[in-house]
Length: 194
Figure 1: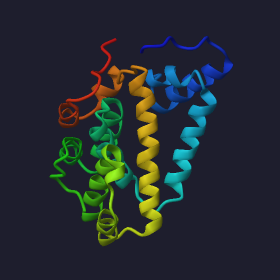
Figure 2: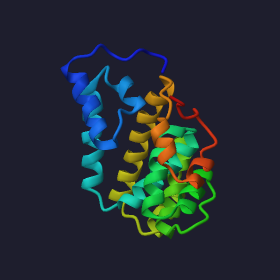
Figure 3: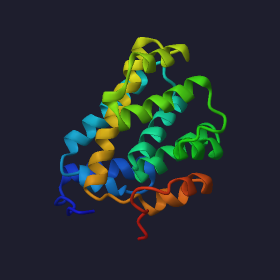
Figure 4: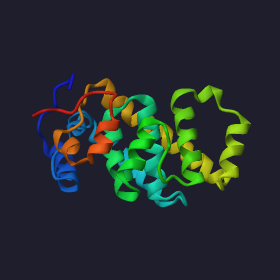
């Protein structure tokens, strides 16, 4: 990482303990976010609020993040959410989304979400009413379309912080991801070796 970890204190210890409890190790990105644990925790709470109040399913959210991370070139989120999508679908489908081919077992809804995520992540000013119409044709209501867009934007913000500050994907994360998914992540920062 390009910045040093913050000084140890009760608040940073709480953030580190939280990721240790959820992941089994302290994630590299946590060291950057520990400079503002209040912001990190607020982001996590906002993400949970958006996901829990939405009719978009966990697998669909994983498609959104994988397509967003791949379009941005963010290896960290691609590995983390590629693992999630591989568990919810299968490794070949997750790898396809990360490669941008969408081959595999994606539903029409998931295909539409992946296309929307790539467009929002790379060219948000190029979106059109026709792009939104394709989401509606896939079965999304306007609330879901707004939620999917919020989620992509939140992921872009999170990824941008991690990437700009040089947070490397964790070795433990990379080792836990199916080989097909790991091989599909040929972009972004390589995983930490130590």
